Length: 173
Image (spheres, rainbow, N blue to C red):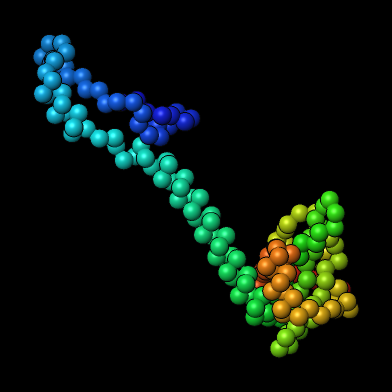
């Protein structure tokens, strides 16, 4: 049987099964239609030939599940904000999308007070730059329904809670 190969790795069988029966004593081909039919019906492609497509499908499914779980977790954290939560905000301003962080300073029943960070970023990131910090004197208010709308519209890119020192989210001026 022939197999489709990618990077010299067989992926799946192609073509028809063919059986060649050889005599062990003399090495000559042995031709028997009934014996060939029996061996053709017994042979199957080994499972490992299907392992790569299955593995690739599992990886793709894992990525989608992970993204879905992250979305659920972000929705939960936006609905119930806590002091110290950090939101990565994507701001549409023409051709480029600057990103910036806000950190929750206080939480009331229907809104939050937040600190903005000092530097805007050209791409999505998960930590503050070494020269960046949150501006403690420049707090502003956002209602929780507004936060939910921002998350639904994709303006809030990420939500961080329980972050480490390496993220830099503990620097204020």
